[in-house]
Amino acid sequence: MDLLDNRGKLIRASHESMMIAFYGGIETTYPGFSNAIDPRYARRINTIATRALVGTIRAHLLQVHQTEKGFNATVCIQPSHYAVRRDDGQYHTVHGSAIEERVEFNHPTAEDRDLARVRPNVPPSTTPRPPSPPIADATHQWSAPTEDVFAGTEWLISFGADLGDAKKRCEEWGRSIEPGVPDDGAEFLVSPTPPETLPAYPGW
Image (tube, rainbow, N blue to C red):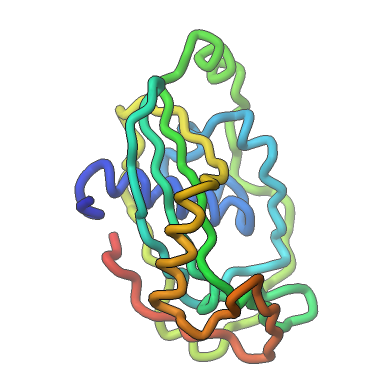
């Protein structure tokens, strides 16, 4: 699949926005995402503003398939080259095979439209957040779209796990690019040094 065509951009923007929401809040995600995310999923997002993602997220669009309501995309994430900077100032990394995640794009039903009408607007955050300490050697920064890639699509976007065959295929892909991960489970590593941040590809 072409990651630069409209559907590829939509999948990438949705998945990246979901990850951003958990660390920066929905109001900091890509333009238009707060209006496209399913309110039922949005309520489950518990933003941890004192933590930050650092490093390079390696992702692979494994498959896209049509459903009765729209389409689903399975995204594989290899976690060994990004870390979460926690309150202790240390960088915590999961060194393991790939994780599978499903992005769901559904045509809204009448019930969904009713939910959308009562969806609260997401205002800019007014809660002061503690300043984040500078990240050493952060040469490359996050690449993000400036336009609203969700505008006019009318998709209702949600997320879940894609188990079974997709899970196994994601694990195989993860080991193909990171063969040194444990055969079973994962190692949890802690370091005072952030992982390297590589340039975004394909970027926006």
